[in-house]
Structure formats: structure tokens, C-alpha cells
Length: 246
Length: 310
Image (cartoon, rainbow over all chains, first blue to last red; front, side):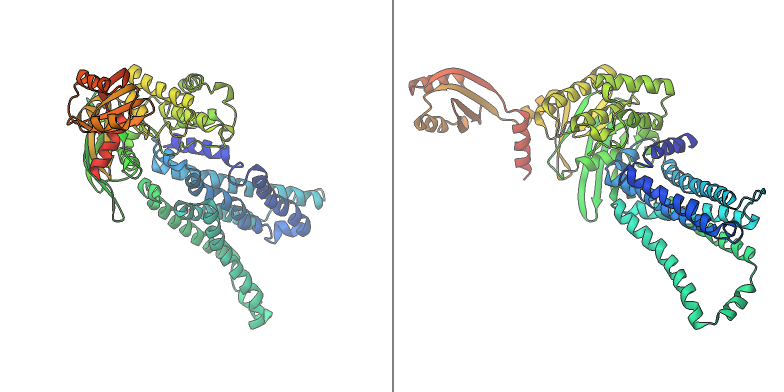
């Protein structure tokens, strides 16, 4: 099984930056979070990047930006390019095909997330160097690592579910982005609109009652459950005959 | 080894109310090239998918290399190579990487994998361009690469869905030669669908003809021609007037007469008496230079089968 998963990872990694819209566009997609979260935002926030939780934007947005295009390629891309049936006719087990495709996207999304955490840390230290190396606050670092992994898992399992059902990569990407972007805009709308209904002092007082480490743990726990749920759904949906008929 | 590579019993498959395969039963002996013919939509591709366990039958069963396709497909697939409707080549990968991937997928050891990849690419005349991305290749080259991928792991059975469709004559001949060598020298069973009757007649030891998911004929090309193909007499010469055609048409043993340039084709109802026919034609002033007698070819037999089923 492990050998088979590695075979799929080998194959997927060969085409990771060459799929769909071509190499240059794939590299552009990769460079966007690198420039934004690795350079611009750390320069803007300096020490606050490490202390105040702004760096959490890396864990929240990098998996979305990087994984969405690649995971939609996984099955919809194979179907669109007429390579899926031949792959399914091989001896590779269902689970190896599924997990191999999922793992390669998680390694890619989470790997870049960690790389950006290190890169932005270096940028901040270069900017504010006072003879002492500055590091992320422990809870912020753990939040970044946990959220990055679980968001990557969420994007991958959700993307696989959508990709399994989609006829084309484009339609899979549209559905996935809609599902991911709508809640983000919804959250933003609440943040912007809340002060018009409630005075800021009441909001601060309300938010001050919480222990943020506990909130983070709850969020991580909920994300983990959602990830497991989507993974189980993807595993039960992955049936050779269903894929052929789709 | 089992004498039969494939045993199909009353295999039926429905798709949302449409019956694609309707109680198909047949057996394919091991080590031969078996042709599976039929018009578009007859159920050929569905049969191949069922044989690979990619689809489940609605009823009936199929046994391939001794394995039930319904619940033993995982054990079966390592022994089978499949070249399906689309060639399945990864265009963004090189030819070498395409074969490397499937070599790994079929668990070929590293040394054997590279030896086999080189052997096949050289044999197919693709070795020099092995590093090029497959998308830069011609259709014929991709099809040859797909065939190389299909037999890479030395399968005991290969299932081919129209392997020479869209190929130029040279490429098609090369593919046919490879298939013949595969069956004759390595004892591999080849199950292929094709619309090319000349191809089927040339390389297939046995042929099944299906229409609307049902078997309409089964046998060697000679047997099919003998059971369904009608006798023909082709007369080459000069002086074929309408009167001559009418005289021939009135004879009992002649079913129909066709004129093609300096040829007359007589489709016979009964065994022809050639000397009498020649004498008759000479009496009408026809200069006969050659006479050929034989059965209709496979294409005509096939068309007749389709006509009868209508």
C-alpha cells in the first residue's frame, strides 16, 4: 500500500506545477502567497507579525490559494484528459490512488505554509534586528502549525469530494472556491457590520471574557472533525464504477 | 493454464433503463487474438469495462483468467493490460515517465523496469524521443506508446479497444505485427475490438459479432464466412452489355449481378457451374479473361449479419 501511495505521489509531483493552465501560471499562483505573506505583510507588521497573530493569515490563506487549483486537477483533471479510466484499469488499489492524490496536495500546501512561516520570521528579524533573535509566540506558532495542517486537510478532502463528481477542472474549481470564499466573506461582513449594531466597548467586553487559547483549541477540534468527516465521505465515494459512470 | 482466458455467462448491463449488454455469453481461448466486432453502441466498450471490473454487471457473470470480475477484480487487474477507448497517456509527462509510472504501478523491480522500458521503446521506434513530453508527439506515436504501456508488465491478457483507430497504414501495420507476435511468441491472449474488418480477418483467430448487446455470430473468420457469407463469382473481361446482365440475372443459381468497370460480380444462391457460365457468356460475345470463385469477405459477411439482425 505504501509503495502504491508513493507511486501516485511520484506521478502527481511530476505534473504538480505543469498542470492545467501551464507552468508559468502555476508558478504565478505559487508566488502570490510567497510575496504577500512572505515579504509584504511581515514588512508592514514587523514585530506584530510574530506577537499579535497577524501571521495566522499564512495558515488561513496559503492552503486555499495553493491547494484549490491542484486538488481540483486530481480526478476532474484525469477525467478531462481521458487518463482516469486507464489509471483505474491498473492494479493500483482505490485507497492508494485516493490517499496518494490527497497527500501530494497536503504536502504541497502545508510545506509552503511552513516555508512562509520561516521566511517571514527571517524577514522580520532582518528588519528589527537588535542583536537578539525574535521568535513567534508559542501559541501563535502552534496555531499556525495546527491551522495550516487542518486547513490543508480541509481543502484537500473537500476538493477531492468535489473533483470526484466534476466533469471538468474548471467546474470543480468554481464549486470549491464558492464553498470556501462564501464563508470567508460572510465572516468579514459580520466583522464589519457588528459595530453598527453594537458599541465597540460592548464587543471588546464580550471578547475579553474568552480565553483565546481555548477558543483556538475548539476551532482546531471542530476543523479536525470536519476533516475526518470529509475524508470518510471521500473514501466512501471513491468507487471505480461510480467514477467511470460519472 | 486455463484453456479459456475469458468466460462470460449471460452478462447483462443496464444504464438507467438502457440495456447496453443483453445476456452475452461467450468463451475466449487462451493465447489467441480474439476480435470483438459490432457497430457503435453495440456494447463493446461496456464489455471491456465489465471484464476489467470497472463496472458491475446488472446480472450474469464474467470470469477472466479464473477470477470473477465482480469480486476478484483486484487480483485480476495485475494480470491484465488495457488499452481503452482513449490512450490514457499523460501528455505533460515524457514517454519514459509515462512508462516509469505504470512500471512502478505494476511493481516491476527497478532493473527490470528500466530494461523493459528500453526494450519496448526501441521496439516501437520511440527510444530517441523518450525524453520529449508526450503532448509533442503524433497520434500514432502516442498510440504505440500506449501499446507499450499496456504490455509493459507482461500481462497474460490484453484488452484493446480499437487499437489501430486513427492510425496511418504504417503505424497500424506495426501495431498489428506487435499483437501477432504477442500472441504467437508469448502466448498472451489478445481481446480486441475493431471496426476494421481487414484487420480482424488478418490477425484474429476467432471473432464474435455483437449487436445491441447480443451475440449474433461467433467463430473463426473462415467459419463466419462459411456460415453466413454467400458465394461469389467474379468475372473479368469485356463486352458486358445490359442484355448479358439480364441473361445472368434470370438464372436460378444467381441471386444478383453487379457490374464494376471490367468486372462482373455474381452473388450466388447455389453452387455455380463455372464452365456453363463461361460458355453462356462466350455465346453472348463476352471476352472472358479471368474468373474467380469464393466466399464473401469478412466485411460483406459482417454487413450481412447486421442486415439480418435488423
